[in-house]
Length: 263
Image (tube, rainbow, N blue to C red; front, side, top):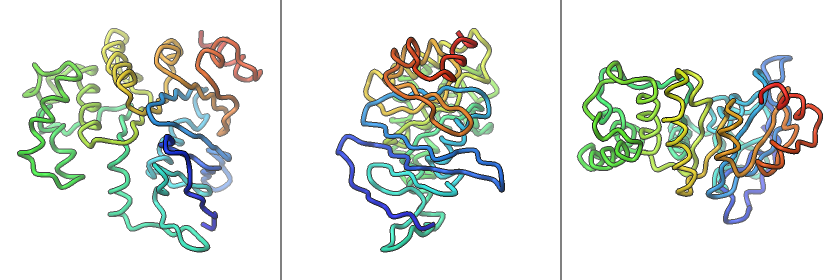
């Protein structure tokens, strides 16, 4: 990779995605995507299936490294060492260190089935950050209380509803004290009656100033929570701007036709 990197940005910029391309052979999934997210901002990414939304999130935390372009978190290039003439791939241990600064909540809950809710949350800072288990337990209890599960700390995933499991997953991501939180369709695996309990937790995170990037198909939720809405189609950002403007008065015909179908 031979991109020239200028890592200077405003102090309030948390995330920069710069001209990211992700391709698999002849198939281009992300086609020159650029995005800036500021501290405390909530960005909702919407668009049809197959538009590259989930791949963008995975490129941000280097689960699917960009084919071209790069991502910066607070001015640090994710996944690469900046040389004088090129970017060079970091060792996996350094990528894992960077990735620990980015909370990621997936569609599926990915909890350890043999651990209780409390143990699932406490395990993250122990395994990823090397912190002592004794010192993180109280924090894990507080995080489970924050997501409304203080009464379920000793329950195993099989004893929890889907909504409860997803809230444990959110608490687990927060246990790493991330600089950025990514959500990939966090309610898509839930029954309709469980959706609001997860969305309300995310709304609370937004109100308390956590920097969020959320891929969602819930347009009403995007309107409720997002400062900025990004519409993607065929691997490109077609339109972005303030949530009310993009959702109520989209300028691009493709955005207009998509919203007409999903409202």
